[in-house]
Image (cartoon, rainbow, N blue to C red; front, side, top):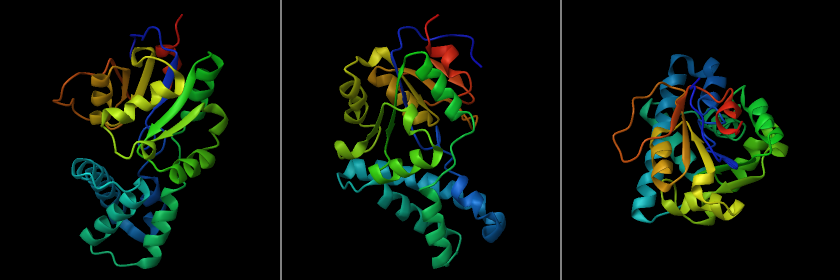
Length: 229
């Protein structure tokens, strides 16, 4: 846990997938059927999912994140020569009910008890986010669930990050943004947020403009970082 703290934070904004919700959970739950292929499938699925958001954003061919997620799943299965319609349907359904990381509910409760606003800001479609939040039982711990569908472009477009300020009437510098995705954390810092990079997977530092304020390995004790003493 980092010893440093952020100052003046009035709202905490969270990326969803990989930050609050475990993106590998769907494939892991099918490990009995996938065998040793479950992890390569999970990794390829996630990598292609992100690449498709960037490509669609750059080419102006937006579809919602549920379509992107299914397209990426189809690619991942084809890349591993897995042809099983039933398994495909099960994996897609499981993605709507991803496990939350174990520390998430208590962390959000601590932030709310300290009087901070909390929100998700995600590429996810409204349907996907509603399902994930309900499955995790954290709806009463969030003040807002913000989706790129209101602006029609994926992260890291600045119009996505602007949604948080519009929701809470706060300048970016009075909000902390938490993401497990390095590119997202760095882009959010460039936008003007105070940023905590939740580097769950020990990724190397990015070589793009701006650097997150702090780096932690999970969300345990986030309140100690963002709540003013």
